[in-house]
Image (cartoon, rainbow, N blue to C red; front, side):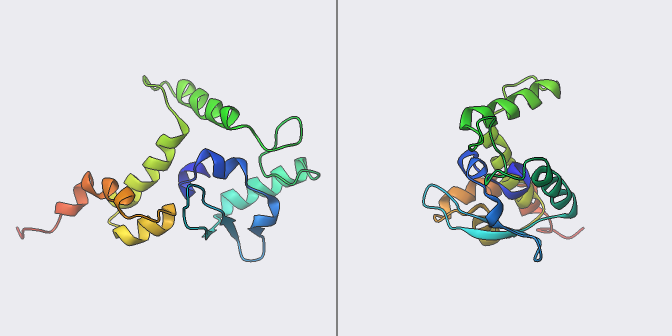
Length: 146
C-alpha cells in the first residue's frame, strides 16, 4: 500500500478501518505535512488482503496494529521495509520513503500528467512533484518523427 498509493510512513501508521469503503472499494487517506487528503481505489488483491487482516484482528481500529493493539510505530514500519530490501538482496539501505518516491517516478514514466501525480501524492506545492517528471524518459518521446 505504501508503494501503490504513495503513502508516507505516518499515513500508513494512522490508517483505520473506518477509512475503507468496502462497497465502493476505496480508501480515504488523510495526508500529513499539509497534504491534500483524497480517496483512492483499492484493487482486488488489496481488498482480499485487507479483509483477511480484518478477520485476523477484528478488535483493532487500526489497519496495521502493533502487538499492543495500537498503531504500528513508525520505526516498526521503516524496519519492515528495510528488512524487505535486505531479503530482496538489494545492495543499498532501503527506506520507506523510497517507495513513495518510486510511486512518483513510476507514474511519471507512464506519462501521467504532473497535476494528476501531484494530486495522487497529495502534494499541495507542485514543486515537490516536478522532480519525478525531470528524470522521466517519456518526456522526450514523440518529439521527433522517424
